[in-house]
Amino acid sequence: MTDSPAGLLTIDLGAIAANYRLLAEKAAPAEAAAAVKADGYGLGLEPVVRILANQGCRTFFVATIEEGVELRALLPDAGICVLNGMIAGAPADFKAQRLVPVLNDLGQVDAWRRWSRDNGPAPAALHLDTGMARLGLPPAETDILADDPAQLDGVQLALIMSHLACADAPDDPLNRQQRDAFAAALARLPSAPASLAASSGIFLGPEYHFDMVRPGVCLHGVNPRPGQPNPMAPVVRLQAKILQIRDVDTPQTVGYGATHRFAGPTRVATVAAGYADGYPRSLSGRGTARFRGIPVPVIGRVSMDLITLDVTRAPEARPGDMVDLIGPHHDVDALAAEAGTIGYEILTGLGRRYARRYVNGGDRA
Ligand SMILES: *Cc1c(COP(=O)(O)O)cnc(C)c1O
Image (tube, rainbow, N blue to C red; front, side):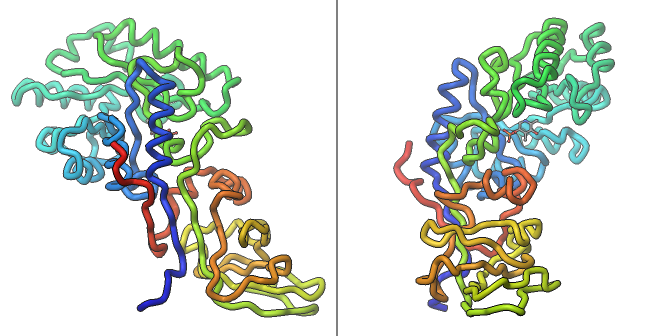
């Protein structure tokens, strides 16, 4: 197999490093941790955490205990918090791998306290729900804890955290409400480092930073401030190969469902990427790729392994050439907007079939 890959995902580790430095500077003196769940937002856990650790990142957040175990093998000394809590593992499983469970209800608090009494103290984080109604102690449970702090006796509180629902909408009053509810709860609980902001929350200002911030998606270039210029460096370029080119004319149609009918002579490029590669089917008749910077629209339906592009305006395109699906002229946010989704979903949905090339990762300490 000497053929070049049909799909190529280039991940700029130097850009991840630069993004981390920008966030760390913005958040200082708060610590900049990193959320690296879902395989480092789809970009590969190992290369992502190695470059972040090189930049001085000491604390990482994952979703599941399995992700925590995988990360522990890569970074023996890092702090690793498991957001989904203790549902999936017994306390001993966390302790064995030195993982910090994020305790999400009073039952988990009690389990960790009793276990720590018998086996020696080990750090845990406490997640307070301040208005998202997702994970974390509901306000009534926070009150119970505040009124009876003995329930935390023996629990080594490494962090008290909460999560913002609307941080990407700076004017939403819920931001301020959650921040104030969090600060009020902190004042009533035993002292511990505190964390509220993820990517977008960092940009709400210093009063949202507390002792630690937990960015994820914007490390990978996604805009933390939708609608404003993106302060982050782009990380991802996704290219796919043209497999075939044909000239067509009316009354022909293209692809499944015959959804696109040609209005006149058209050059069609069939390209090796589809929804099985995380190129959303919602881009049928709506997406745009680029051939050497020239926009080439998706025509007809996105199928599992293929898309069809109108390359009439790029007459020099040939089979074997690559088109950009995500790239300098068309970033993750632009693709997500066309698809009616968010950059998070695009990144974490990137398929397994692309060859992956990591660049600018060397010698960056
Ligand atoms: C995913 C997650 C983060 C990181 O969020 P981004 O928006 O990607 O920065 C931080 N905290 C919690 C609780 C999360 O679930």
